[in-house]
Figure 1 (spheres, one colour):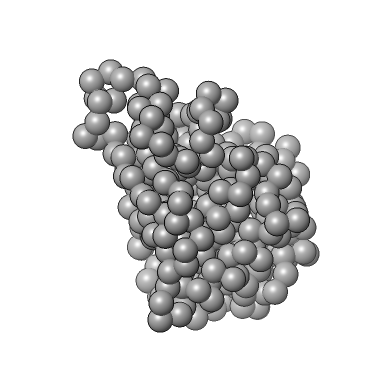
Figure 2 (cartoon, rainbow, N blue to C red):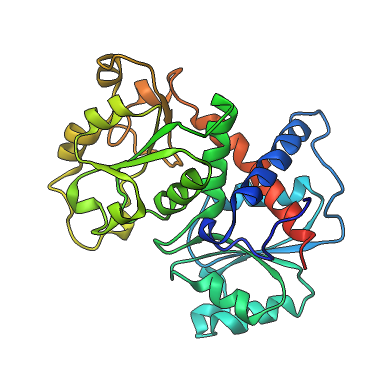
Length: 307
């Protein structure tokens, strides 16, 4: 099998284990490419990709753009902050106008859950979901699981704790689906106000004590407190959150084993992670960033072959 089972990457929920394994295999090849002196391949030379971001993003947008350019694709960047969306144009009109310029693939981030799914039903181009509301962020989950796979050489049987603001995170849901499909055990941990009500129904463990979660896991994927999505107060203060859920070197040293620390970024240093952890040998945060480009190259390359 040399292509994905789906025409779009809308969410991890929609793809199968073979798809994920193929993306990993392709990403490993592209990782070698981006570590060469000449980092480009002509794989998508005839493809035009539009990055359509209706929400602010620095790292994801940059990572996709770099992946596209490494594959020699033509790249069009669209930002809603200076577009006709401000004048009342609909999502479908906006994207159809972009497609009229003969674009083959759309990478989209939108604040509304399901926006990429709506587009996929209405337009011909391949759609890659770069994050839809608090729903899914499939490429982040793929690069996270790929980073764990590269570190341990397996995912089967590994214990992964996702710690922090689970309620507002699209990363958490995608990671849960990806890890479960690859045979890992998953736990979520955070204040009860930041855990979705029926999260346990996904077949994962739920823990409120961060020390117990760290003691249980092999890998801790620590999420940012998403203050920009919180319209009410979910905890008394950042200082209090840091006191009960922040991870520092002293806490890691008190465990009777070594664990690997991850973070999808950007980090609120001193809140969910202290610098003495984020910059330590425990951390594979910078590997996640490097793997992000390789994984996104793999996704774009494989989708370009599915029409």
